Amino acid sequence: MIRFIIFIAFIFSNISLSAQTAEDFRKAAHQALEVFDTPGFSVGIIKDGDIILSEGYGTRTVNKSESVDGQTIYAIASNSKAFISTAIARLHTEGKLNLDAPVQDYLPYFKLYDEYVSQHTTVRDLLCHRVGLGTYSGDAIWYKSEKSAEQIIRQIRHLPQAYEWRGGYGYTNLMFITAGEVIKAVTGQSWSDYVKKNFLSPLDMDRTQTSVLDLKGVENIATPHITHRNNLPIDMAPWEASGAAGGILSCTDDMLKWMNAQLHPKQAEQKGLFTKAARDQCMQPHNPIRSDNFYSAGLGWFVYSRAGQKIITHGGGYDGMYSRVIMIPQMKIGIVVLSNSMTGLSSAIANYIRDSYLGMSTNDWLKKATDSEAKSREKWQAKFTKPQASRVTGTSPSIDNATMIGRYNDPLYGEITITEESDSSMSINFQDAPALKASLSHWHYDTWQIDWAEEHAWFNFGTVQFLIDNDRHVTGLQFQVPNDDIFFEEIHMEKMNKME
Image (cartoon, rainbow, N blue to C red; front, side):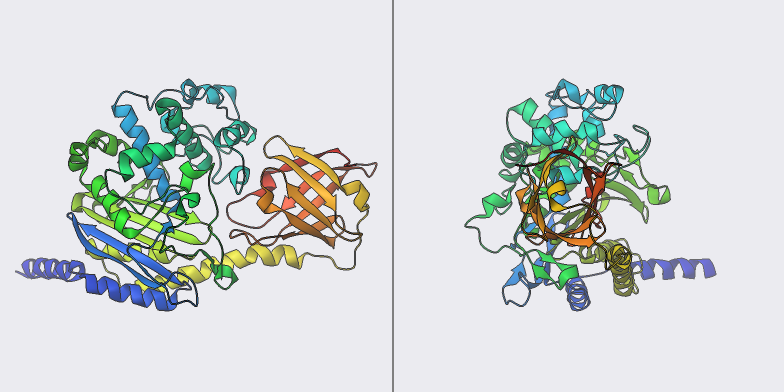
C-alpha cells in the first residue's frame, strides 16, 4: 500500500512538473529579461504540430522602443549547419552523392594536414567534427575575410592536427564551409540556392535569408550587441564565404516550420522536403563527445539522452547574437530561442522549457543560469587581465619603424602589411580582410598593441610582437589576441621584404 501511495505521488508530481502552459513560459521569459544583460530575444515552441508560443521580449536595439516578436529576424549562426547536413543527407538518399565517399571525389583540391587523411576523409566526416582539427581551429582564415569558399578550403591543409583522425572531437566550421562546396559541386547550385529552393520556399519560410546582403529593404531586424562592452550595438557582420557554417538569418515563426518538418519526417517526405531516412541519418550519434548522457555529434546536430528521451540540439554564436534549438522527437516538441546578445540566455530558457516538458524539476533554474553566466564573464575577463598585468612600462622598441614596415606572409592565412603612420605609430592591414585594419601603438619592448578601426564582437584587445633574428632583422610576427574563437595565434607571419 505504501509503495502504491509513493507511486501515485510520483505520478502526480511529474504531472505537476510537466503541466506547464504558455503563460508559465512567458513568465520565465520576463524573469530572464530582467536578470540577463540582453536587449531582447524571441522564443518559439511547437508541440504535436501546434504552436504553443512564438513571441518576443525586450527590444531590437538597446535603449530603443522597437519591440521584438515572432517575425523578428536574428542571425541563427551555427543552427544553419542542420540545413547543410539535411541537404547532404537528402542528396545521399537520392543517390546524387555518397556520404561515405571521399570528399576529394567532389572537391579534388580538398586537403588536410596528412595525405592519407586527405584522401580518405569522407563527406560524413565533414559533418560530425572528427577530422582531427581542434575546436574553432582555422576560424581566423574566414573571419571577416573576402576570400571565396574555395580559397578558404585550399588553405585548410596548413592547419596542424590536434588529435587522431576519427579518434576525437573538434568542432570545426571549416568542414561545413567545405560541405557547402560539396553541395555546389554535386548540384551546380550554391548551398544557399539549394536550401532556398528545397527547404525555405516549400516551407514558406518567407522571412528567412541566407545572407546579410539579402536583408536590404527587410523590416523588423534585431540589432546585434556586444554584451561585454555595455551592450554596444553593431552592424550585422557579413559571413559570405563562410555562410554554409553559419550564415542563415531567421525568426521564430519560420524556425518553428523547420523544426516541425524535422519532427514529422513522414509529412516532410510527402512534401518532397527530405525522407525520414535522411533525417534519421542526421539525428544518429556519429561521434561520441562525453559519456554523460551519451552526448554525441550527429550530422549538423548534437544528440544526447535526458530523462529517458533522445534530445536533438544545436547552438549558434554570431557577432552580437546567440541562439539555441532543442527538439524532443518522440514527444514532437521543438524549442527555439533567438537573442540579440552574447549571453547564455538562449540556452538557459530553452533548457528550462525542455526540462518542464520532460517533467523534471526546474527549481532555481534562473539562479543556476545566472551563476553560470557570472562565472563565464569572470573567465572571459581573466583573458584580458593577465596580458595587461604583464605589461612592462617605460620600455622602448629595440628596432625602428623602418625595420618593421613591410609585407608578411603565412601560407595558412595569406598576406599582412605593416605601414608607417607617423614617427610613433604604424598600421596593420590584412590583405583579404580589410575590416580588420588596425593601428599599432607601442605596448612594451618589441610588442605593439592592436587598435582596431572598427568594433569586433569576439575581441577588442590584442598585441603583436615583432620577431627578430640574431642580427636584429625582423623575421616575422607573433599575435596575442585573447578570445574564445578567432585564434590569431595560429597565424605565423614571416617577413617578405621591405615596402618601398
